[in-house]
Length: 238
Image (cartoon, rainbow, N blue to C red):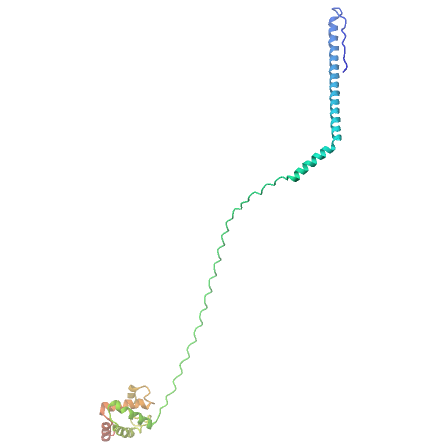
């Protein structure tokens, strides 16, 4: 650094002292300012030099040992490969079971359709009228049936001869025999014919019905066929 030498001025008289003092102060201020600026410049130059030296050393160090840095980096990479960082264990994930949504209410079943009204039953056909009964005129059959009924009334077979004679005179053992003058009807000549209905509804056509009614009539009125024949011979009716 440069050195500045300040030479003292010779002292003057008192009359010039005040002015001299004033000029001296002004000159001293300027010098102080120059000195301060010089000092700052010097400080800046020195700092710049130091910075340049530091940069030169860094450059020299970097150019002198590039292989050392590469080697260091290779070692670090090898250590990373051989000792990989452990990945954190996966955290247990707990899934909260969700409550099942309630099943929707079943749709109401449709109301069953009303059963169709049954068709009205057809009116029953009127029953056919019974065929008119056909009277059976069988004198031999009628006599055989009468002979078989005598024992039911407590009569012996000898009464059969009297019975055959009596009803031969009245009707000739014909089921449909009718007396034209009196209206008497049948083998037994019932008067009126409706009296025989007590023995059965087919009294107009069935000789068995007529014979059953006639035997009861003889039993009640004459006690036997021979008693009825004797009355008939005396009165021409019985």
